[in-house]
Image (cartoon, rainbow, N blue to C red; front, top):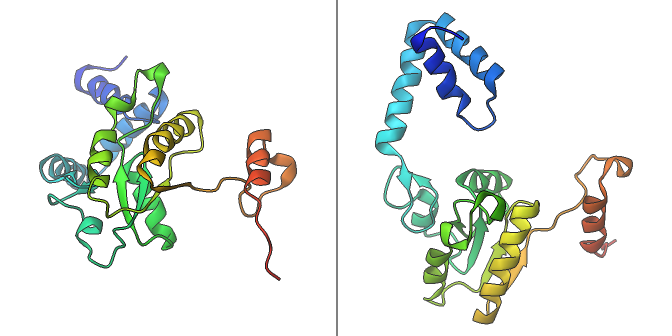
Length: 199
């Protein structure tokens, strides 16, 4: 629709996850109207990400070094390993300040529809990490959707015979939510995961 480089920019922005054609167009025109200094800063940041960021050789999290800061931290409990789908999940869990163990990033979830199987994820690396016997508990923190559930079930079946304690993050009603707006699956999970009140 637009001339050359403008359309190329819109097309490239539209390839980003969660950015549709209209959003791509809006972002492109925002960049065109922005101060060139701001746009150059964005270009520099993108270039530095390509040059400097890699994935941790131990857990698969994003890192500027061969190992991420969590894997290098001696205060983290090496006996508890939290398995997540993506690096952004590590950030979400870290924000809670509730978990003091280490992580393993799978790099996605099992999705037969998209052609993603266990061999496409970092499952072999997980099993290799567990060979030392240092880990005693695995927390499966995959997304509470069809793909996340399939991945958690696969991993639980794979890891239980190894004598590990395999747990799954609880799921259910959000804080501040109303029962009438909860879907059946969420409400069902809330009943399954109910706990005793200590009063």
